[in-house]
Image (tube, rainbow, N blue to C red; front, side):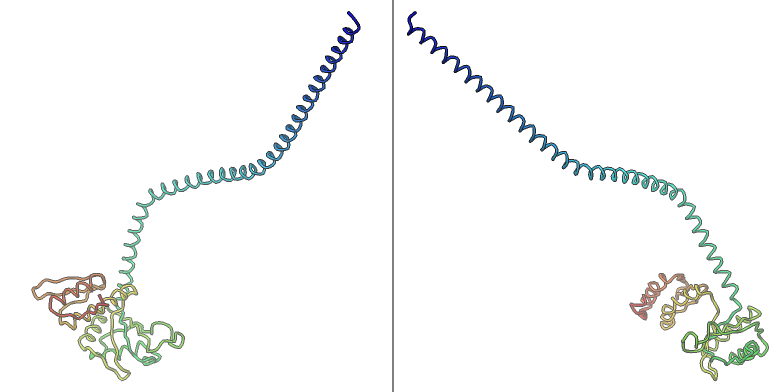
Length: 288
């Protein structure tokens, strides 16, 4: 081989060596670039994970608290439902007993009302008598005064006690004389007084007009007062009726039949009907 051939061979080997070095450098740079990218990705991923973990923790914490509260609420609601169920069971078993007790109480109140009114049978209530007219000895006064104004025989009645009802007018601010309650010794005396007052109609005295009434309990008095308009309408229409205890209107028909009205709900519609049957209209619409 000549000198030219040796040089050519050396030049070829040099070029080959330079290419290998370049490839190695390129591979190294590529590896470094890949490593750098991986490091960046890992760093970014780590930062994102930290941020997400922080945010998720902030969200999960109140959710856990709400979940705990809901669990407590559900538990309490279960307790309430159980208590309601127990109360319903107790109510179901107690309702018949309560109904029976109400019935017994109603009967007891009716008997008590009856006893109270029986205890008042010997009382007469006088309305319209001037204050102080009885003086300081009301029993002696009414023993003489009642027979005088009603035309009864002196000494015909025996008075046990007598007094004004309610507090003095100066304390209540009301006008007009207070009612007088007279207690008779015998029930027959009460009947004499009421019959005489009814027969006489208007009882006039020096102190003015007075009225005599049978004494009733507050409940019976209220019931009787509710029938005032109905009884007035019957009187004005000329229809015969009787007023029975405690507050029953018994209407007598010309054909011999009769109708009894025991409650205020019965009175006004039935009285209106009876008046229409007689071709008479007395009741106002507001009274029905």
